[in-house]
Length: 614
Image (cartoon, rainbow, N blue to C red):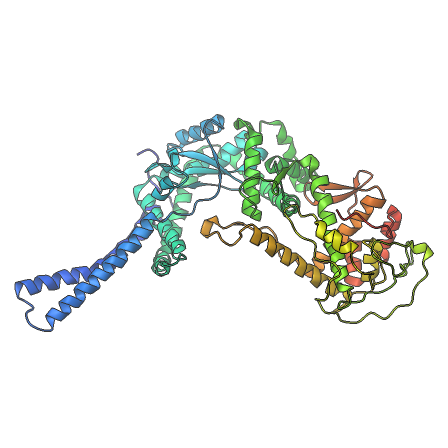
């Protein structure tokens, strides 16, 4: 058979010998199941021939026969589950030959040069990796994958390619990177290796089946067999990888060394694009429709900033690998939707509450809405803490910059210019505050669009006069409440805790609405959640930053923008202002508003002016 050859490399354990070791575990398990039946046959034969006449051999024979039948029944059910359970399949975007004839031609040419079977099909994944995946299991033929060449009995594995590679890499680089992956179809065609892999995948699927009602006993023997063959299975895969790498050394080996640098660069840019740019949009119920095209812009920007990446953009004049696709835009949109599902848990299809967003509309439809939703949540938390059972904040904050004094107590929605208001006497601020209390306004809902809904606005408008001495959704109110509010038990700590609780409640409600937690095994999403745990102080800093940006947009002519590596940014006069974060941290962590007040004064931001929350 083409491509099997010798898979024994110098200094590498034989993959075939490791595969045989895995199969020996299966044989021993089968022997254990058949042992009671064999003993029963011996006893019955002895009784029949008269060699074991009398008692207690009659009773012993009956007991052994009953035990043998039970063991055979249990072993048969277990074997049926292992054989029929559907192994996990990576969610991918299938790529037909009609959609990428040039890519299929490139892969087949690689397989011919290395004398290995070509992959049965090609699929794309929104990740910076490539591998072979066997989808010839009978369960796949019974499922939604039926009808494809990859599901035929004995079919070659499917080649899964990371979609960022197609947009960032050049055709020659992609060819060099895929060579050792395609070479893996040779060892995969060996009967012993294919049989051992099928056995391990069946056991893994059986463990998942064991989580179903009535089949819990399946998981224990499956895990035991997996532990027994774990080492040999891992060494078998290492041997296969070493053999494939050795076979691919004759194909573009020099270029592969250079292309591996692009793999690392693509991973760095893809990670920044997902966590800094895509994740805020996903939280707002929108998904960027062209992530793969965006990774090119992100990596180009990274190459411009990072001196280690200098010269990489000079390759952009060569033919990109995405030219191997007939409709790159359609494929990019499909992989972008899959990325949102895998990394965030979004719906599998677009809808009114889960719609795509183009990069040109990202600042207005994502950044601005994100800032205003967070500003609304911040003021809702302030209303709750300033209620009768909450925490009374300071009534004034005198800033040396003179930008704003203290606001007189007034009803919600009423604002008094700071210059015309004298400092008012007020009660001292309590040192501690309960996290819960009678809220003057309900928490901002986190709907699919992520924008504060009408309930929040109505609650704010109908709220009783604020007892913290500041009126309405103004930046001055936030500055006054956080001034000197650092330390354990102060208002800043209580506000951070309130924001954390509100955000967690909104996320739980959104997860319940989407049916999260009902999926099982590989169907559960997100498979790779990107959202890291954030502390209360981090959340408070993010919300204060959003409030500052809203005030700058409303009163100082600033505009929301997007940075390919850092996500939402504030633009003033078309230039990014990157000096806001340390001033916000100074307010949140130290209770010192002066650096932020000076920044706002230089920008011309009116802190006493109410901001638009929707």
